Length: 139
Image 1: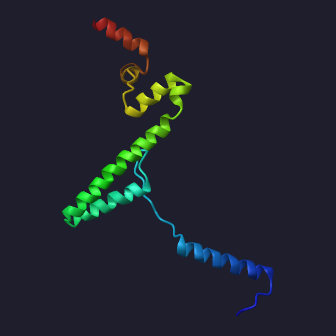
Image 2 (image 1 turned 30 degrees about the vertical axis):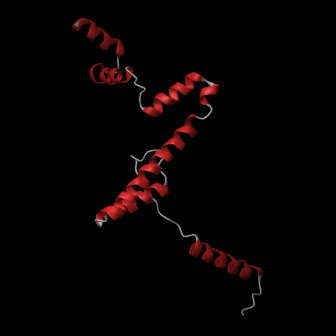
Image 3 (image 1 turned 45 degrees about the horizontal axis):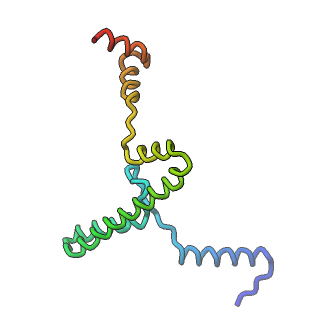
């Protein structure tokens, strides 16, 4: 056994030992995220989808059905948990904010002025009044 004489040698040995053990037992995992991923998608869900796709690629129909069912069940559970967490407490605190959040999450919130702003930008350099005047003249 090698005897360490200075504090600096002891610190370096300790750091290298701990770093080596952490790298061995807790390796870094690279996870790819896509811009189209839903907010409730987790790493575990991605791994399950990857397994399902590999089984499908290998033409293992029975195992594919098993993984397909697992993916569907996990998808439902993750969505329910995400939306429940998102809306938790909003209804009791402020009904207006609760409905706004519900409409935003479900995609039902439509803002009619948004297309008009785009049309005004395209035809009249963003002048909404000029767009309204143009529509009035047409009718």
